[in-house]
Image (cartoon, rainbow, N blue to C red):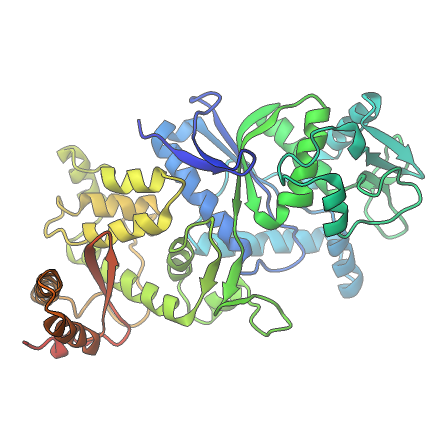
Length: 475
């Protein structure tokens, strides 16, 4: 069995992943607040956890992995949207969930095992809040229920910061009913026109943090394997989840995964800079969902991801080539079945080893370039398996087709052999320190629109958007 290693935010180190129960591997991802379209940054941890879901299913079995991603459908942002548009809250959340599914489906993300909505778990949130009050970790004040941060000595274990540091670095809501500025809301009263439910403390609604603890407990149990989200959730959301769940008597998550944020052309994505866009914006502009997926997975989740036009063009070129290879060799459900019978339809060990090392998707993609050089369906079985494993093919009866003509149409076996020969000459020239010859080869490849990537001492290539096989002349 492949050993998966993951960087645990809580321990601040990479660790061997050992599930609590290999027959029941459980993970939770904080999902969206459903009041508007998902922006590009929202898609990053969805794709990260999608790859993890696939890897865990391959390692432990499809029926042995439970993946929960929630929908926050009670929130002040939703209330504000309802007031602004004069629409019913239920209509807004239902529409937005539909949009979210459509957009994530277009990116090839598998649906989680469970997608609970916060409003379906109000009773569990009330029960957990009552339990925390009974144990002295929460208190009622002016119709609110607040978690008493000072009652939990380990508060700050995830972020590694003291309470004083957290107060200084956070926007803390100052309220006269709070015993400590860091105390956070478990329940709050609802006014006219706001959604609410009856509770022991009056008509009201839950705070944000309590919902994930209640849903995770109900669907995954008192202790589960993995919890994740963007690093912007590390504090206060995930810190508060740990505090309230632990004080309620639950060990909660063993491993915490956090992805870095997204940039656009080297700058933070923001509406004020005019570089803010949603997944649907890109799809409507004609960017294929698999292109978005490849650009996203091209950077390790623990590093900031920069969306650029250059990366988009490179991803389009790579996918045209890869899909052209699969189509050119007749990959179909029947061929995959035959390759399974032949015993060659399985994960490439090097690919799997790289991917299992803290979800190194960028390294796994580099391995795809190497595996794509196979000349027969049997030799390409590992490549095709990896394409499916990374979510670039979901149905062998319908291999994606990008705009711009037949994928890889210019890359005949003769053209591919010519590029490979030039790369071999380049490698020999470099080894002999004949930099002039190496530069000549580079110039030919550049003129022909061949994009070369050097990884681990080995060169791989893809068609660039301006690829022209006629320019692959002799030296």
